[in-house]
Length: 335
Image (cartoon, rainbow, N blue to C red; front, side, top):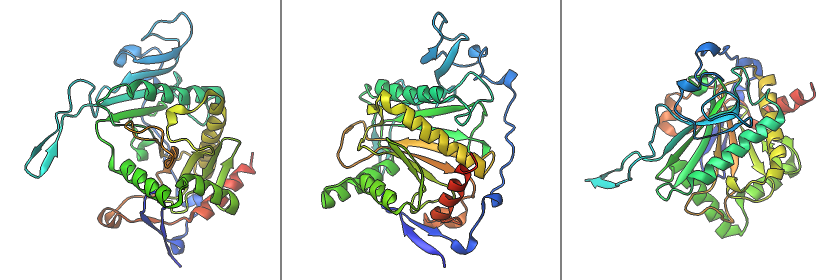
């Protein structure tokens, strides 16, 4: 029988359509054909095809905007928001508007065109995660900014226009509604129970062990109780921390291991899977709070959002997260 499940972190309901129960083979993905290396602006040697770099990790003795880099951060050539100007928020009757200030950056994760988070050396994935931290620390110095979202679109179905492995960062002068909602719900939970909601989720998931995918000393990966899409995964630090930029160098190996391991399992179960990946962290106005817990969400793009979802705000997931966890755990045994 179908179930309605509520996500305690967002207060949103999800329909788990058990009678539509799907298997991984039902989610066949197309091969990605998004560009050729010789024309790709993100490949090493094509640095002149991008805006000048903001920062990079590169070999000693090499110059900015030249070959020799491992990770390169550049402004987006077609930014959603721009760094110049002031917000100048004002009203027009019942409507509010403001200038589109902020930041929009591309983190090119490797000079190699065919690399991916799944195939890169673990040490390189650590450097990518450290670059995320450094960009957060740099941009939060700007008092005009309220939030910074780091995200990744992998594959055409997830919105990627280039196949070369990269992530993006958008900093906004407002707090996005989805994050604001998470913060408010977590705050109410803390006021009522004097405990962090996410810490409680980790404790319960470890105890029930129905939806745990990967688990190491510092981090845990789960299929959320009210997953909105098949094979959705949430990665959380086991130690309470609201601000991603406070992650320690000593923790990066465990995080890289969990992220790469999860993506490898997803690709085993659904080859060439497209996905979105994002980091939810605390507001720039209040970085260290006892009630919020930074986390990473991975959303495979295996179903389509249609009229019911747009009209109701309810998602229909044909694969229970417990079943998804079984498929992913069986993929571990193949190693």
